Image (cartoon, rainbow, N blue to C red):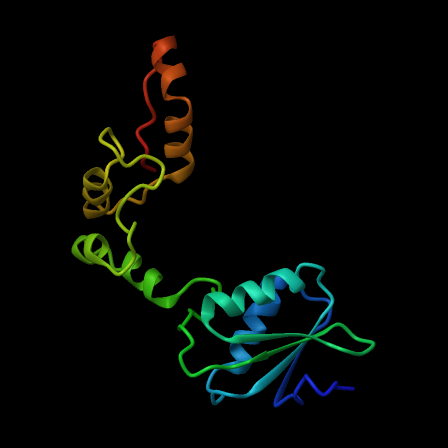
Length: 171
């Protein structure tokens, strides 16, 4: 039962009983190789879908058409030609960013298309966790520990006042 505003589905993805993460995995797999302009109807029961599906469409570049009128919870989207690629196992991450970070190429990280790549967003002005130390750690094959960095940044003054050492920031 489609209204005049909702086009009929070219593909229907049944996500009944699935959480949004699993639904996005199934959706990405089903639309892979589908031509642009195809209309996809997503059947979903997860209460987070009305928020997560439009956000995912915006991030990827597909057109979110909204809920389809009817008895079931169905949402429509239209595939676009200029959609940004995502990884099959994590469709909520752009493929390009993941490839750059996983390559451990510090030049690509510091000169990449993302304005804050290679820099610690928690602390950018001097100190232990600047882009230089992040890159040096990556060159040594270690991953930044965001939780430890966050704890170190938020409690740095208290730790220094109590005479405790700082977190190293690396796993």
